[in-house]
Image 1 (spheres, rainbow, N blue to C red):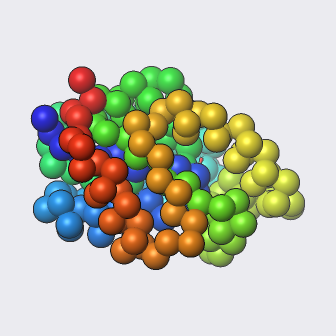
Image 2 (image 1 turned 90 degrees about the vertical axis):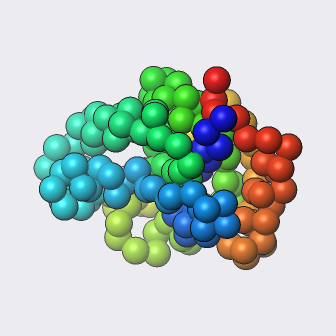
Length: 176
Ligand code: S3P
């Protein structure tokens, strides 16, 4: 049993802030796959990688970053919102640990994911339309990839962490 937790979910659902708190409660290390990608790209931002290399190259970098974590123990991993898109990534995530889908009301997700300009996929003429399309196409993928689902709507970060701890209380798997 590694006890690793993998947070999945749409942009703006709070994977990083909640993941950090959850890690500290569990005494685990916190990792963020976007940060690992940035590190491997020598500090270039996600926006820069998307702009100069395109989404496909970004996804390759993402798969490599996730692959590098399969032997990790005692981690909480916050993934990028699109990390579940590739079937091979979903397999990797399951090998890493228990996958927890953090969901929230679409309005909350939209507001949070467009609050800053760090999400190249939503830096488009009509972000609302793109947001709706992406969310609709991804919901079933999160559903399928998740061992557990937590609805964080109306919950503070602390309350969300409590819900996750309660949900995993029955035991966390190593993905085997
Ligand atoms: C993406 C989500 C982002 C980041 C990239 C692509 C996506 O991560 O990986 O902009 O496809 O949903 P967050 O979910 O942390 O914003």
